[in-house]
Image (cartoon, rainbow, N blue to C red; front, side, top):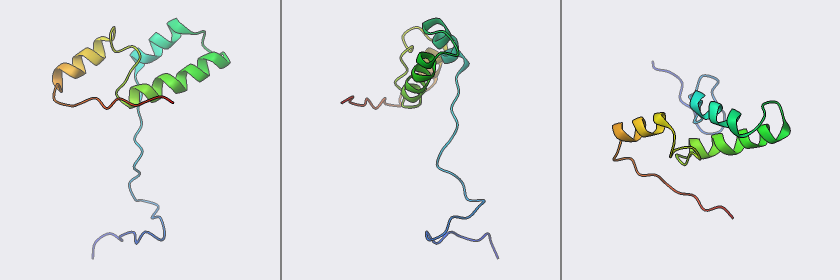
Amino acid sequence: MGRPQSNGLIELVDSKSEESGFFCIQLVSYLNEERKMGTPEYADLWEIRFSQAKNHNCAYKDKCPIFAKTKAKKPHVPIQLQLDF
């Protein structure tokens, strides 16, 4: 007998979540240059910049060595641009 399967009506406690964490220390260092840590503006910018980066549209990609290294390893992965309304 295997693991219990979800039937869609209830959520199993041990079922895998669709969300995955994302963190980039280089992104934080660029944020620290752009805004003062601990301010409301910093918190707002944190949300915006991390959301952009998770969607492969990092605001700092032109100057980031980590982004360049990642693109060099995976050049075949297309970047999906999102329209801002």
